[in-house]
Structure formats: structure tokens, C-alpha cells
Amino acid sequence: MNSNDHTNRNTCGAVKMAKTMQDQAIQNVLSRIKHKLLVMSGKGGVGKTTMAVNLAVAMARKGYAVGLMDVDMHGPDIPRMLGLKESAQINPDRTIDPVVYSDKLKVLSVESILREKDAAVIWRGPLRAATIRQFITDVNWGDIDFLIIDAPPGTGDEPLTVAKAIEDVWAVIVTTPQEISLADVRKSIRFCRQIDMRMLGVIENMSGLICPHCQGTIDLFKIGGGRRVAQESDIPFLGAIPLDPNLTQAADLGSPYLNDAAATPASRAFAEIVANISNRLGLTNE
Image 1 (tube, rainbow, N blue to C red):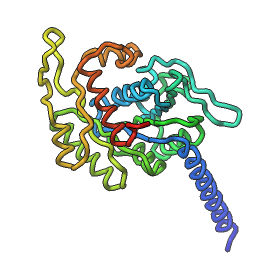
Image 2 (image 1 turned 45 degrees about the vertical axis):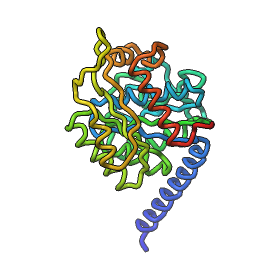
Image 3 (image 1 turned 180 degrees about the horizontal axis):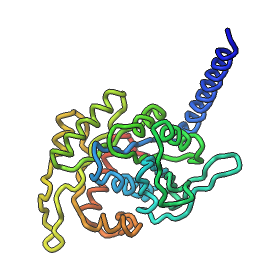
Image 4 (image 1 turned 135 degrees about the vertical axis):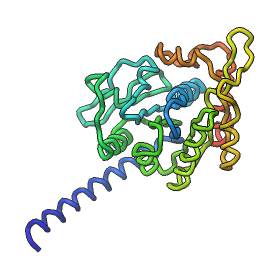
């Protein structure tokens, strides 16, 4: 054996040992988190991040301790949707304290650790995967009921890394009613089945427009497509959120839609979805 072979073997051994130690650290962190949800979509523009933010707020308002993790490295919008300007605290021991939104909700995004909030994140796949694993390993989530993870659209590195690192994660798949969106959702469902990731169910967003004058529903993008694809794929349908301009305005203002106490068709739909998720996870008596 020459010296190069010996060096290569030592290097490979060190890499394997470091990964084994990180895998153990990940399991230690995850053991303190009861339920993990990965919010994903087949394509962009379906309101996936809006769903993740408002689901996290809704769960926190029900009294659950929630962590919201943004693993969309190139479009980390969650801090802006929540009006968070603070940076995450990086401690001397290299652990990270997530940003506190409320006494029941903590948030971490790649934007939370960037010096320049508007900096472009130009990272290749391996670095994105390593960052996600670090977000799980080194973040002080503590004992929480839910970790809600917002992934970028599609079936790329981020959702795959989450699925491999968190074996008991549930996928929540967001779609809109149009057939072009449903075609991509079918790919997401196949992705979940191919990697053995459990699916909690499908949410249909932009399911009809609520008229601001008569409060009637206008089938702007059709309705029912999400329910149909869930039935065809034999997975649960969690609910439909009508299109409400206030949802977009709330995100732009950095104040989640569900922070408004007003009862609206959309807020009632969110409540139904939270109830369906709770029932699916057996939380009705908690």
C-alpha cells in the first residue's frame, strides 16, 4: 500500500465517522420533536409557503409548540411573511437559536443566518443538503410538538434530503385546481412513494375566488382538482382554501392571515385542515 492509498483510507474513515456522529446528533434532536411535516408542491406559485406559514401559526394558536424551518435556499420568504427582521443567534458552541416569533412558534430560515438579507444564495446541491442537515442537528428546537418544514417546489435535493434525514416525516402536498398543477402533484406523489415517505394528504389552494361584494364563490381556476387527484392516488384530502386577496396582502405586510381574528371562508378552511391533520395524527385527545 502506498502513502496515497493510506491517506485516502484515513480520509474516507474520518468522513464516515463524522457522518455517523451527525446522524446520531440528528436522531437526538428529532427525538424531542413529536411530529414532522414537510410542506411540498410539484410546481411553484401554488401558495405552498403561505400554507406552511399559516399552518404553523394555526398550530401555535391551538397551543402546540411549533418550529417552522425554511429549507428553500434560493427563495427564503418565511421571515418576510412573518415580519421577522432579527437574525438567528449563533452560539460559541456553534449551535443556533432560532428566531422567536411567539411563545409557541420558533422560526429558522437561511435568511436568518445571512449577513445580507437580499444576498443571492448560489449553492450547489451538496452544500444545500449539508445546510439542511445542519439546520436539524445544530438548532436548539428543544421539546416541540411540530416541526413544519417548507421545501422549494419540485422533487430535488431539499425534499430528498429532508426525507432521508427525517425518516418519520409526513408530506403535506399543496396544489391548485388547474390540471397543469395537478400533473406536477402526481409527480410529487410518485416521488413520495418511490422514497417511502408517508403522505399526510393534499391541500387544494386557490379553490375558487370569494367575491368581496356578495361573498359568493367564483370558480376562477376551477375547483375540486386536488380532491380528485387525492382520491385517484388513494391518499387523504385535507381541505381546500379559497382564493382571498387578503392572504397575499397579509404576506406582503409581514402579518400572517390567521393573525386576524375575523371569521372568513379561508380562515374556516384553515381550521378544517388543522382539524383533519390533528385527526390523521391522532391528536384529538391531546
